[in-house]
Length: 182
Image (cartoon, rainbow, N blue to C red):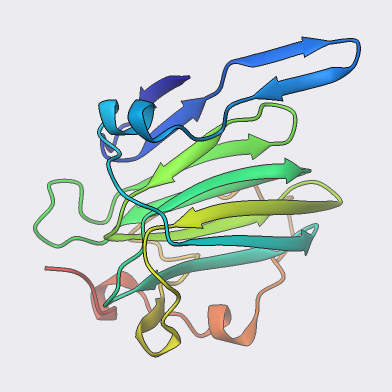
């Protein structure tokens, strides 16, 4: 596995070693010792799986208490995955990272606690798996606006195309009004 630091050093791209032959492929997607050596020493308590149709944008979600770190990967299709640092005391507060994750490139993204997370589906549909470091706590879930100009995520939207949003995601808060981490 290769662990690649991004412009926000705590957000890490993981590229697995893939062994392919005529039968298919094999790859290790998680190994606690290797992750700990790369600075990801969190334990995971929950696995999640979502399937979304093209043009769906999910997020930007976070839990203000019981904050979750997430290890995200795509097993079918392709997404643009984004993370926003919402730790007020951080030197990268309000900054975002966005990368393509797909079944083809097999990359994963580590998003630590203290970040809002979301993704946009580029393919006809996509299946996303992610491991979380804390349990889902709906009473603490918050949503940051996907189109917040102060964050400035460059979502790869086709011209004139509006993403498909849930009512919760459409009602998200802009960063200046959002409840964030200290």
